[in-house]
Amino acid sequence: MSVLRGKKVLLGITGGIAAYKAPLIARLLIREGAQVQVVMTPSAKEFVTPLTLSTLTDRPVLSSFTDEEDENAVWNNHVALGIWADFMLIAPATANTLSKMASATSDNLLLATYLSAKCPVYFAPAMDLDMYKHPATLKTIQQLESFGNVNIPAASGFLASGLHGEGRMQEPEYIVQFIKEDLSKNLPLRSKKFLISAGPTYESIDPVRFIGNHASGKMGFALANQAAMMGAEVILVTGPTHEKTEQPNIEVVPVISAKEMYTSCMERFNDVEVAIMSAAVSDYKPTDVAAQKIKKKTGNLTIQLSPTTDILAQMGVDKTHQFLVGFALETENELEHAFQKLKKKNLDAIVLNSLNDKGAGFGTPTNKITFIDATLKTKEFELKPKNEVALDIITEIIARL
Ligand code: CTP
Image (cartoon, rainbow, N blue to C red; front, top):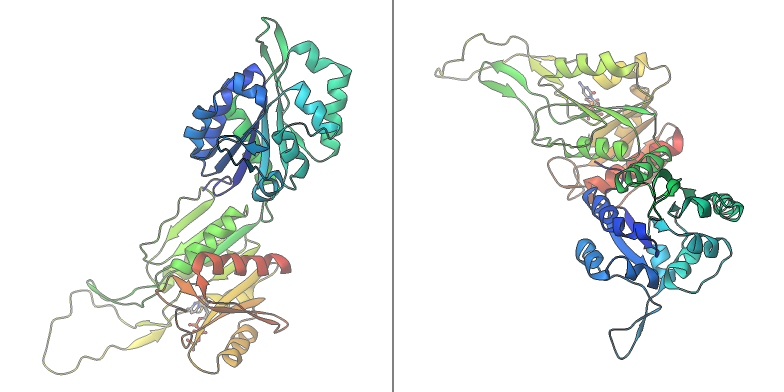
C-alpha cells in the first residue's frame, strides 16, 4: 500500500508555464490513494483550467477568498484547509510566489493557506535559469528551507524561454516519488522488522480431515498492514485464511499446521525487533495422522491428541533483543489469566480479548482489547474495527520500543 494512501493533499498551483503539468501531478497523487484539493493563484488559471483540475480531483478548485459563483459569496476558509491537509505541495512554485511565501505576503488564497498550514510543505520551483540562479531566489529558497519547508530542486533542461539550464520544474512522476520517499523517511517504524503470526492452524487427522478453529486472520493482517504503513518490514506467518494484503513491505509466509508455523516463526525470530503472535495456534494435534481416509464404523471414534509446541513461550525463552507481544483470549478471570500468561511466557506485552465482550475476539470485524505491558500497566480500549485496534496496539508498542 502506498504511503500516500488516504493522505489529504493541498496542491497549490501558481502561474508559470509548468502549471500545465499540474493535472498530471494531481492524477498521480490520486492514483496512489490520496485526496487532492487544488488551490490556484489567479494567474495560474491562465495556464491551466480549473475545470480540468476539478474534474480530475472531483472537488471544486479554490482560487479566491470567496466563492464567486453565488451572489451570497461564501468565504473559503484557508485556516480549515491548512488543518485538513496532511501536506501541501506547491507545484509549480514561481519566483513570485516563493518570495511572497518567505515574506509572509498574503494577497491570494494560496498564500493565505500556506501561511496558515501546520502540515509539511513541499515546493517545486519552476522559472527561467537566470531567475533560478539569482542570489535573491537562492536566498528565498534557503529561507523557506529554514522554515522547514521542503524544496524539490528544479531540474536542468529545455526551458520555455528557449534557453537550456536549471530552473525547469521536476517531472510529475519525480515529484510524487520524491514526496513518497520523504514521507517514508519520517515513518516511526522505518527500518524496524516485525514478525506477526495470524489465523488458525489446521492439524490433520487423515488426508481429508483436520482439527481447526474459527480464527479469520483479520487481526493479524490488520496488525501487519498497520506496521507496514508505519514503515516496518513485516514477515506475516499465517495459517489458512481468506485475508489478503497488497502492501509491498509485507512478506506473507503461508503455513497450515502448528508445527509449520513454529518452524517458520523460529527461523525468522532472530532477525526481528518486534514479534506479535496473534495466531490461534492449535494447542493439540492428533498423535498419529492416518495415512488413508478413516472409514465410518459403528460406535464412537476416539482420536488421541498430543500437545503442540507453544511458539510464543519458546520465543520468551529464546528472546534477546526482541519486543515480544502475545494475545490472550479468555472467558473468565480475564485480567488474572492475562497477567499469568504474560509472566509465564516472558512477554513484554499481552493483548487481552474477552469472549464476554460482544463483538470481540474470533471471526468478527471488530475487537475490544486491553493492552497490558510488562509492568502490568493496563489500558482498556473501546470496541472498534480491527484496523483501528491494530493502530492502537502498534502505537502502544512504539511507545515502549
Ligand atoms: N500461542 C503460540 N503457540 C501455541 C499456542 C499459543 O504461539 N502453540 C500464542 C498465541 O498466538 C497467543 C498466545 O500464545 O499469542 C496465547 O495463546 P492461548 O491459546 O490463548 O493461551 P495458552 O497459553 O495456550 O493457554 P490456554 O489455552 O490455556 O488459555
